[in-house]
Image 1 (cartoon, one colour):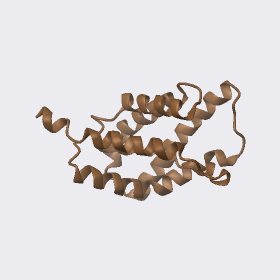
Image 2 (cartoon, helix red, strand yellow; image 1 turned 90 degrees about the horizontal axis):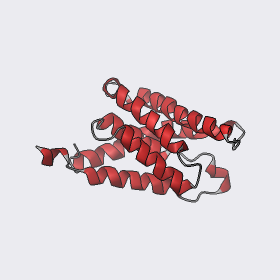
Image 3 (cartoon, one colour; image 1 turned 90 degrees about the vertical axis):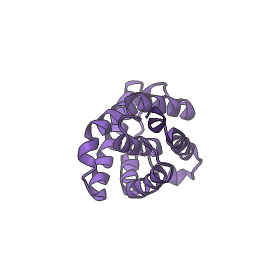
Image 4 (cartoon, one colour; image 1 turned 60 degrees about the vertical axis):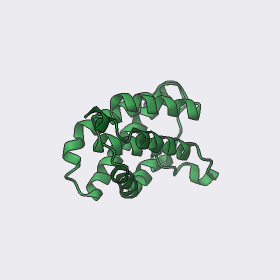
Length: 162
């Protein structure tokens, strides 16, 4: 039974690695503000799909890794992604019954919470970015949610991730 429980963990890890890569991939200056929150999207998906395997601790490690990769204040992504993982794990039973467009609205809210927490931390150390474009990743992430779900669900089913 423990063998079945541990099946497919490498798929989860590789999906996070891909999200980290997409988060630091160089973009043109005009597109930088429109970059989706890839790590948050992957974390939200796995917290909805497998809350017993991906949760608060995974959010903390993913956030800490993202802090190191982006070279920002250590702990800002760790705190925000931990809270997002907690909320996603808490809501996972309700969300499974929602259609994808309603899930996208919830993802918009969760990514917005993530960005709000990061904004609060950055403003406390006076690194605030001005403008409405700061919130653009919320919209892009919500728009991409159906495709993220389709891709990760395919890998989850193909590799029997449980």
